[in-house]
Length: 483
Image 1 (spheres, rainbow, N blue to C red):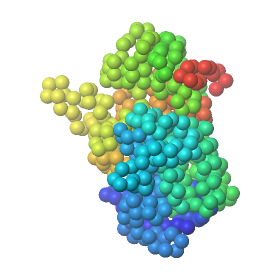
Image 2: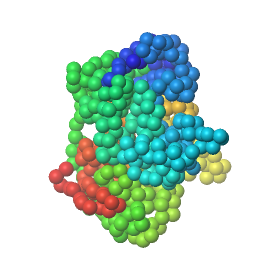
Image 3: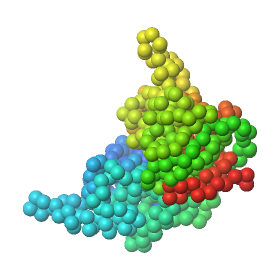
Image 4: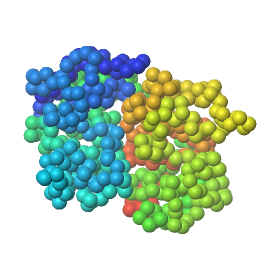
């Protein structure tokens, strides 16, 4: 169906793709794997006409194609679900789902909105998006926006469907629904290119796998001929030792206590304690109320009632600035694009922004450049963030490297209490281990108190001393001791 032949692409200081050749066949789900910065997203963007290759060519069914824009790619029956949400703000769900096909519903200069809404609803039901088509997208969760992206791609009915980390924010039920849809697409003769860091998904639904490393193709293999350990070794270039971290020395001192936290539709009577040196897990399906509770605690949302107690004293936190600078309580958002990063600013600025008050001269009010550079270099190295320079804009990084910058920003702030929402979303297996070790060391070596919010059961079990289980905006259970 699709052949990628000797494709090369460079950016300033980076050889993103180096003579990559892959054949993607009809009737298959083909996994495209590699560490963050390996070249996966660049290759996809070349196929979709977003980037132009310096050398090489693309062929569909033996015919050379030269897509110069994503619109060209759509016309060539290629559709793309990006890991970066491409939602059109302040528009309806139906407008976003049917965006690429709206002209088909235009007559005499007017769009037939009832028909658009009806057709959009069909694709929304396919992906399990149970909301009205006329809802404004600005009021939706990240998970719902992710489902809109998938529904939009399905609406195009393309022969080549590319999905880049499609399951990072959606529930297990929606993931299963997506897998069923992909198998139907495959059986109809379509080619599906599937990019993910979740290897269990690869073995569950994919037929073949291609691995990129440092912009080069390491190899392509049928899934039946490869095991998980060898696949990881292909990705990272070495054997990865996945070891447990041991038991934490949790202090008999309460760092954070939450009493009767309530806000309608967001949190119902949330009560818990977080000890010094503890990693407390918040587990539950997407929409269960974990993130909502966290935002109420740090002042990103206002509570109707309840108490937040830090080091034995009740506090009233109005916003995230107060949370950080008055109470040394930080929050790493799962939504790095809208809440975690300033995309058009450089890496140095994004990492150090939480420290500007500390780095500023008391008299002249300017930022100490040397300290800023030193701190940025430290965290880039510690998290192995792949960059061309500290002055590179964050928007030009891969999704996984953006996630690392978001994490670095709050680790640099040196909070006493840190809430981390989905710490390894969109991050490769090697980086995931490094991030897990950093989180564990925060509690174990620095006596920090950490809340980890995760939909990854293995992650939450591996890191947490205790786990609070959320459902329907409530804490419905607690697991401890056996972990």
